[in-house]
Image 1 (cartoon, rainbow, N blue to C red):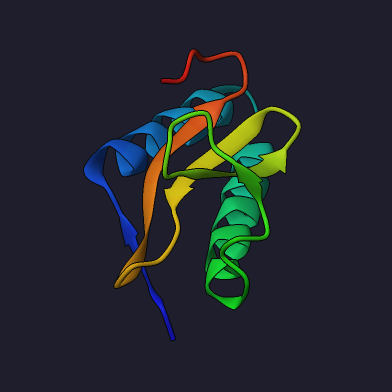
Image 2: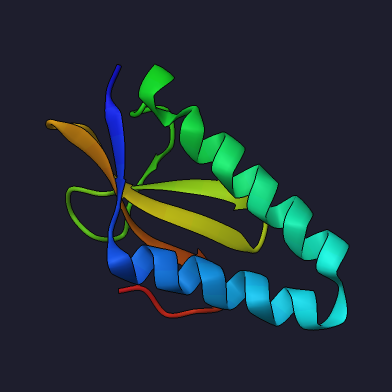
Length: 91
């Protein structure tokens, strides 16, 4: 099975998003975190299923309308590059 590797910037972004949401709604934050973890966990099954990324060599997994996981398809592993709110500029 292909490994999933999280870049430090992606972990930091994910934690910042979850922290921001949990200030107002801890249950919603946990649900979003669960959705992201579940969908990222399914990437090894079909890593090319999601749309091509705005940065060459990446793909974008839309978790919900407003949340996107940017990843690099497998070489030795699938690399989670960034977790974004759709309103954020990327790259």
